[in-house]
Length: 285
Image (cartoon, rainbow, N blue to C red; front, side, top):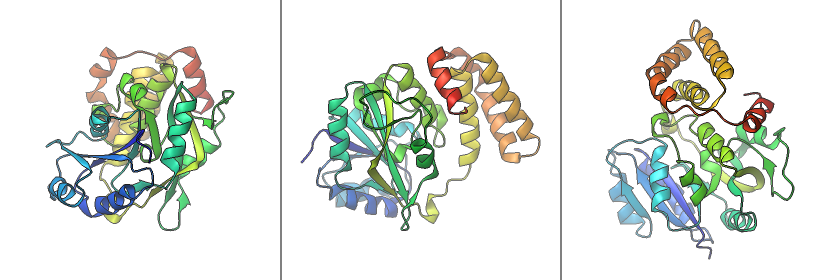
C-alpha cells in the first residue's frame, strides 16, 4: 500500500465512463486516495459516486471550471504527489508506486509524464511519441526523457510544485491547458520527464467528444504565447493565427476568442528566460 499518491479526476456529465475508471483505480494495489471534482454535472454524478464509492472524496463545484477543477482537487489532496486521470482513463497497477519512488529520489523532479495507451487496441498516443523523441538535453541522473509538455491524463505531479506554479489556468478550460503549466514548472526550476515504463490507459467513448476543443486549443496556444513568450515570437504566432483564420473558420473563431483576453494577457505578461525560450525553440514551438 502506497499512501504517497492521490488520484484527481475532473468530470462533467460522464457518470457511465467515470464508474469504470473508479472501479479500476480503486482496485489498484497502491490503494491511492481518489478525489473526484465534479464540474456541475446534470447526470447525478456526485450522488452516484458518494453512493457506490464511499472511499472516494467528492467535491461538487456546482459550476464548470474546466481543467482548473483539477487544481481544486490537488489542494484537497493530503499526499505529497498527485496523479491525474480523466473520467475515461486510469492507471496501470504499479505505475503510481514507481512514480512516487522516483519523485522521492529526485528532489527537483516536478512532473512525470507516463505512456498513455489509447483504446482497446492500446495505441500509443501521438503526444507520447513526440515526448519519447524529445530533442531536449537530458539532465544527468533523471529517470526519463526531458520534456516541456505532457498529457494531463497521464501525469503525476509533486503537489507543492504544482500549487506553487499556480495549477491549471481557469481561463483555459479544457484543451491545451498543459502547455502553460509545463512552462511555469520549468521556469520555476522543476524538471519534467517522460517515463515510458509508467502506463496510463485512456478509453475515450463517443460521449468523450467535446465541441469546441480545437477552438480552445488554438486560443490557448495564443494566450500562452502572449503570456510567456518573447514579443517577436508572440507577434509571429499571432500573425500566423490571423492568416490561418482567413481559410479556417475554427482558427478564425479561436483568434477572435483570444483577442477578448488580450488585456488580461498583457497585464499578466512575464516572458520566460532565455534558457526556457531556447528549449521551446528546440521543440519547434
